[in-house]
Structures are given as C-alpha cells and as structure tokens.
Length: 283
Image (cartoon, rainbow, N blue to C red; front, top):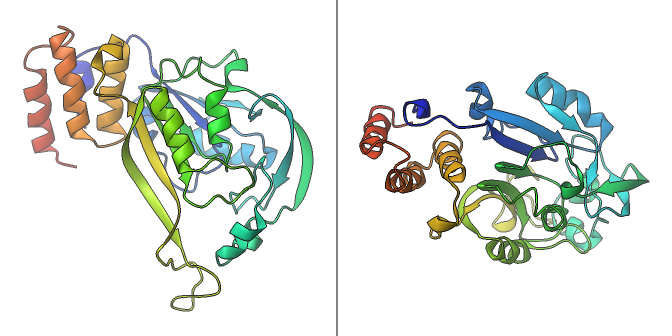
C-alpha cells in the first residue's frame, strides 16, 4: 500500500457514506480507508433489523442514521426477509421476479408499513460526501436526484444498477447512467456483474448457478477525469487515494498525481515514486 502522507496531507478525512449499509456480506471496498484511519463513515438504513449488524460490522466509530432516504414523501416499505436483501420502497414487479429462479420467494414481502422518507440533502449533520456507496433496491436515482448538494464534493460513487428492473417504476441502468453523466461523472469500472438463470431452467441442479441473463451490476463512477479543471485540489487528492486504496486503479491514480504535480501540490518525483512503489507491491 502506498503511503500518500509522503506526498501530501489531506486537510480532512475522506467522508464515506454508505446508503443501504445492511448489505455487509462482503467486505466493502472502502474498508482499507477505515483501517488506515483515512476516512470518516456515515451509514443509512431504515430497517431496524439491520442496525445491530451494521454496528458489529463497522464498529463504534461509525455514525449511523435510521432514515429511509428517498424523496421526502411518505412511502410504503416492502419488508422482505433480512437475508434476501430485497426490502424496498418500490413495489416488487411480479413478472420480473418470476422470470428468475427463486426470486418470487426472495422478493416476497413479509410485511408492509408506511414510512416517512427523508432526502439526502435534508440530513444536515453528515458532512458532504467524498465517496458514496449505495445498495437501495431501486431507489438509487431518486436519492441521487435529491442529494445534489451533498454530492457536490463527491469524487467517486459505487452503486448497484439493474439490467432487468425487479420493481415497478425502477429506473434502469441507462436512466442512471444518463443522469450521472449529466452531473459530471463517468463510469470507471464494474466491480461485479450478476447473472441469473431464467426460470424454469436450472443448471447443475442448483438454481443459484447463473445462465447468461444479465440481472444487475455493481459499478463505480468517478468525477470526469477528462475535465480536470472541474476538480478542486482536495478532490484530486481524495480521488488519488480512493483510486489506489479502494479501486486498485493505479492508472487513474497516476492521472490524478500528474494533475497534482502540474498544480505544484506534490513534488516533481511523485509519479515516479508512486510507480516504483506499485512495481514493488503489485497487489
């Protein structure tokens, strides 16, 4: 791991926000920032069944908010089994669920109840966001559209995008992509592309074995690296750190470091120093 403190001191921690933080079956990509003491974490999840797990996963230093984030209106929460990860503020789309093996069971609501939603911009206490992670079962675009002030400083975001919408009125990948590009973000990498088998075909007697049908993907967007004049000095520094420590995108990190060198914010040898370190520690 490269020691960025040899190059510069961040004036404040990288502010990470995780919305839908109950999806903790896998280690989040920002975990290395927390381990290094380089980040401050805020989490959001309105499902009280998940709060204990969030606390156990992230420790006492995380600031957790119990709000259901959406557009500030009252909505009907569709509460599924905690293990399914499919609780949503949107109504399940029966035809889409039955298209895949097992999803009619995964997406079945155990109960529904009315909730008052909040907007991301209306939550005053958390700091503006540098890195955003979202897994909110169809609410991604609505939350983003009502959080533009908090996202003004955002350098990178990770979110789940659907190729087949499992909920009524759920924006698809194309809708989300067009909006993020309009806000000055560019797709950088896929972290995971999920496929599923189409019902009733089952491979190897296991309905979880995927076929070719695309379902959804975890994707990372970054502030447009072709528009470097739109970056503040702090955004450049923070995206350099995120690129290296979270995304393992050495080339994107070099791109940020070159701009920092042009602005006289790092030493002239910074890029060569970083590349030598990467060669010694290729992982």
